[in-house]
Structures are given as structure tokens and as C-alpha cells.
Image 1: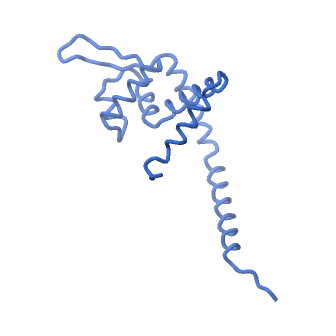
Image 2: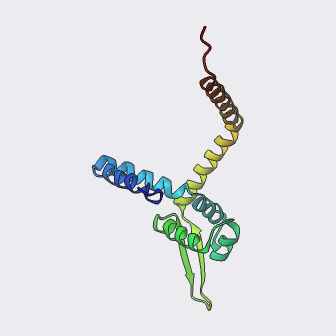
Image 3: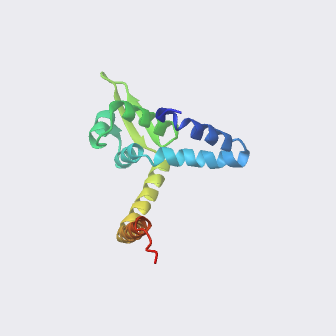
Length: 149
């Protein structure tokens, strides 16, 4: 299998896992979490929870996003009920995106998660350093041949 097709079997397996009613509920939750946890979605939600935002404003404030990705992400967030798109009948048309109450609730949850990450940042860094040090010692031990007498 070529390197470009490595995700095909995973996707097929994921579809099979969502065939039972119980699995469908879990898959729906995972799909929503995947959608709203992306860096573009979070960036857009951070801007729109502060007030209505136009496309160009979002493009400026969400660093690194392409026009196409911004368009797709806005559509998905609107489809999921997290954004409201308002078109004003002006020339040229004025379009604004506003976070819905559900998105504002999500924003509050994101703030809680951010707070948790900030409170535990040093513990996580310490745990990573300890883990990496132990892994390095174990790797050195595996490379050093045992002395036989």
C-alpha cells in the first residue's frame, strides 16, 4: 500500500465501528469533538464569541488560515449550529458571523480546559522530562552489551 493511502483502512474500520446504535452515538460525539477542537474552529469561535465578525476580520485574526479553510470551517460551524450567518442587503453584501448561545457555552468550556492546562503545565513538563530521561536510560541499557564472565 502506498504511503498516501494509509488512512483508508482506518476510515473503513471507523465506519464499521459506527454501525450499532450505541456506537453511532459515540461516533457522533467524536465527530463533534473533532470538529470543534480543531485549531481553526477554536480560533473562529474565540473571535465570534466577542461579537459579530466579518469574513475579512476573521481572516485577519485567525493567523495562518487560508480563505478556503476559513470558508469550509465557517460552513461546518454554521451547520453544527455554532455560528449564525447574517447577510445584509447592501452593495457589496455585508456578511457577519456570530456565535450562538451553544458556541458561547462551548467557549466557557474551552476557558475551563485552558485554565486546567495552565494550572498543570509545569507538572506535565516535569512528567515529560522524567519519562524521556527514563526512556533514554532504558535505551542506553539496551544498547550496552552485557558483560559475561
